[in-house]
Length: 163
Image (cartoon, rainbow, N blue to C red; front, side):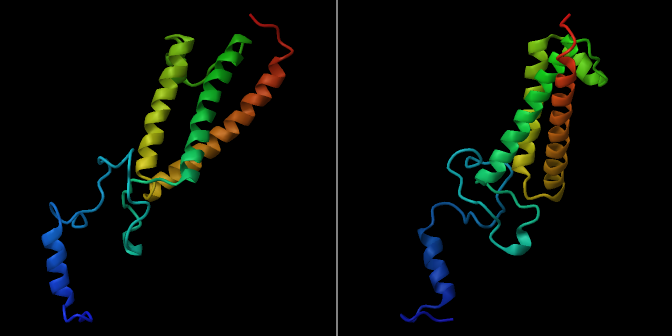
């Protein structure tokens, strides 16, 4: 292909390469973590359709961020509602959660919140991977149903005096 001024595509590429500082950033795919991952990112999607599955990006949609923020909020709600239910005489059936509760109430909420935040960050970074999208859907659905169950338990527990 020739340009109107007589240059070819190859020569135009050579001129662009000579002006470039450093190497061609497009030679390698966007890494999972880069200096743009959290501030000043540039890529919202893969450049080519066949690269979309499994590609890392460094700009995330507000919709996905809101969904993951609601997911995180549901897990914090689960922590607090669990503690309230235990104060009414309920029992924790999850041995891992019981182990964390034994450390203390505040420690339980922060530990569960911190672990959830790490998982949410991992899923956010891997949003273009099939299993990450599945994890978002399953996790959100689970914690949404769990929040409804906690509301049901709290309504039942209103009639029980606190210990």
